[in-house]
Length: 186
Image (cartoon, rainbow, N blue to C red):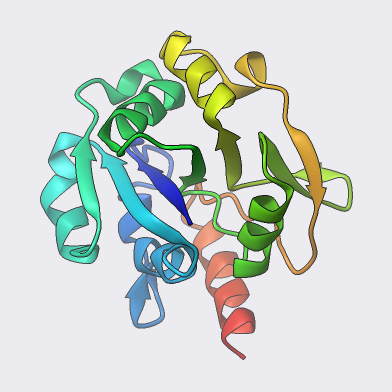
């Protein structure tokens, strides 16, 4: 088993409402992501911003919720807050809440490959990514605003059944996301 960090601290300015709480059928985006992640991860930490903390807790009562006091400093800073909240991890699955186009098979392929890995489908990289102990060390030593691409070298793990084009940024992305989840449910 591995720990998971769900990154949900963004301001969601283009979306106009918190991405983690977007309605997907009878659920929320965060709850849908948790359904997949909790099948393989024994520890789940969700990192959010202060104003979303209560709503996130209500949507994920079985997860540990931590608050990034400075989410405007960047996604790596949010990841660092999540890593600090974990028990001493040997590996961590990093799951941005706005990049949901993965399946349980994606996670299993990453875990099987090990190391510092990202899923790839049709030549396009996606999420979640897996960090080993050395990658975690590098992330913790980085500046909060550095991109993971600048910090880490990922090995590619070929996967199927994913849609890495799902990037939840704007209200019109919600329809495509809902259709993808409906196709996964059948």
